[in-house]
Length: 448
Image 1 (cartoon, one colour):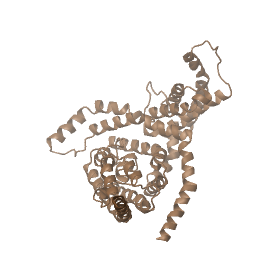
Image 2 (cartoon, rainbow, N blue to C red):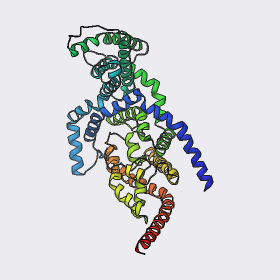
Image 3 (tube, one colour):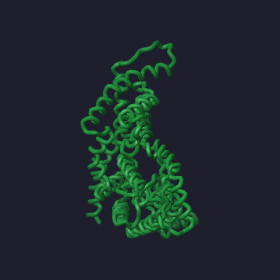
Image 4 (cartoon, one colour):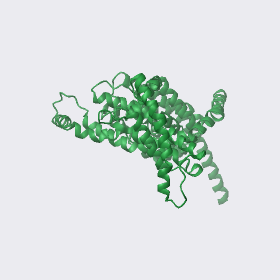
């Protein structure tokens, strides 16, 4: 036991001294925060758009004879264009929303220090993104690069535009107007020089890339990032993300928020590729997306603690049993702070191994199930608070095999947690017995 305790202390010191400070600095870095908040701001458009995609492509075989399924398929085919229009205006051009939202949130970091207007930052970034991603062709604006393909470009353009505006402010480059001019008019004139800089820098670059490589900037950037996107969709990358996120959580830092914020751009790029493949009736290429993380890896919350809550419900320890009853409903909606801090699990050496092991085992099993086509793959953005079986089926286009897999994974997590739960339960029972004996002796002394 002492050897295990020493190993735990060694790992914990490494996380505390090296991993946590780096993760803390990354999570509080203004550009990272702006990217994370930008994705969150754009999420409602993507959730609604993804929801409508399921209506356009019902989860039934084309040769089904079930009357309900047949009617749905026929209706979807007849009104496919009308059903997909809201999808095209949300998920289909999600990079527009992401670009404007990131610029707005980054601009908010410079309101006090550089007097930037976040709204003007968003407007400039939106113009710059459309300039390089959707140049007018034969009287129309192409939208091919406004979906998942344009995410990396949207991020880079938003940061470039805001930082360029900050640079001009720092060096007092702009059109100066008297103080009597209304603020909105001053803000509009402040944007003249940044617009000119964007046109003189990004547009020539776009023209050069089009002439030399026959592609737009978003397509060129995607070709550069393609190996990284492919690597992020592999099982080793998934396990590494799970390990880092849960090591940070165990040290008291919200690791899931940090990891998901860094992976969001890859997740949405993969989602866009899956949705494009679905519309073209092609095999879905990607596995690792936010819904895969939320509903298959961390069932019940970080650490896949749904299994632990199941164990707690029948515990002989009054403390654990009460924590289980308190946590069961929130855990069903992927909220596990009651069990994380009520147990507590954070910095508790008894639960170090299962807290890391359970989500990693879930990741391997779910990845294998999708790889071997035992279940489908993610095609929708789903609110993370959706109950895991429902959310998993929803994310996969109402593939109810996914709901069955979630139940299996929750049981697997419970099996992994069970021996460690019994060790901790034994410790608490001893403490509760000692406390009960001490209270009895105090009562006897009072009576005497």
